[in-house]
Image 1 (cartoon, rainbow, N blue to C red):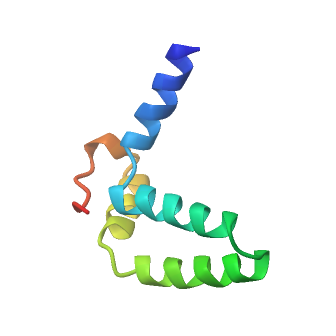
Image 2 (image 1 turned 180 degrees about the vertical axis):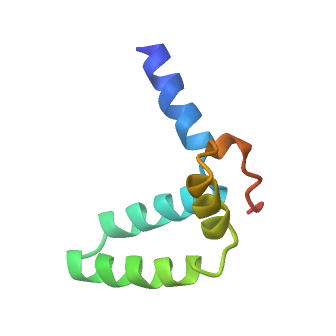
Image 3 (image 1 turned 45 degrees about the vertical axis):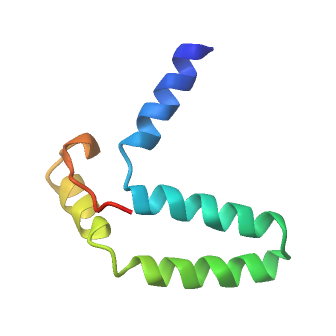
Length: 76
């Protein structure tokens, strides 16, 4: 239903833009490559994402039981 789709969209919008775009990139890559190649690419992508401050901000919000909608994530 439309309301269910809007709830999913709201949940995605609350996430880090870096994480959302990264998820899309690795999913598109995995679609056109072998499982082994996809896993290597995901491991490399995840290692690169550790450089983003978004991970620390998300962890702090979780520890403080704050909603992600209150977190100011980095721009892309």
